[in-house]
Image 1 (tube, rainbow, N blue to C red):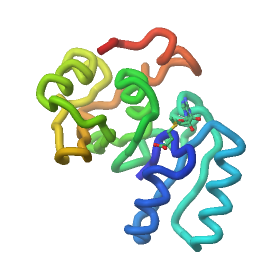
Image 2 (cartoon, helix red, strand yellow):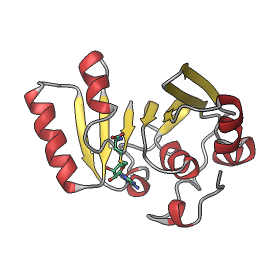
Image 3 (cartoon, helix red, strand yellow):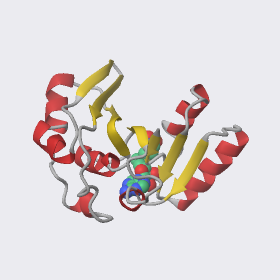
Image 4 (cartoon, rainbow, N blue to C red):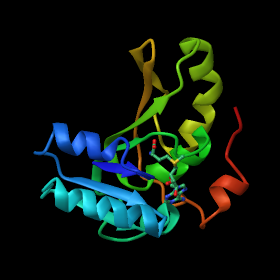
Length: 164
Ligand SMILES: C[S@@+](CC[C@H](N)C(=O)[O-])C[C@H]1O[C@@H](n2cnc3c(N)ncnc32)[C@H](O)[C@@H]1O
């Protein structure tokens, strides 16, 4: 799996610690955060974890990373449209995107934040909410490959496919 925008280590370091049998790539653009993550990986002796220092929009075009993951996880990466567009290129068809969500009125919030037409455009299924009070997430499945996504660095945030 790939953790999109790991920052200081969430959820990547937690997942790697609890499920050391998983191959995990932690993707992060900031050099300083990546230095910390590499140190943490070495200290915790996480042998199946790789840190990739790159912008997601670039990394998703790398042949060794494109459509190479069964799952992408993200927490606080950005607005839903940005997260979905930056994540989708890493997923193989059938792979799943799991995004940590703020707790709230799940039904209403999920439909507003993750609208079906935008997700369909990206090749993602309608969102399935999960979790419970204080620990909610949405899960989407990649239904088809689409070479258009992600757009160039900065474009997903500058011209998001939708706004909640
Ligand atoms: C608000 S932080 C969240 C970090 C961590 N996931 C957490 O929950 O604590 C967002 C992180 O995503 C990274 N990020 C944002 N856009 C990115 C992009 N396009 N490519 C790679 N990393 C990105 C930022 O550098 C930052 O470390």
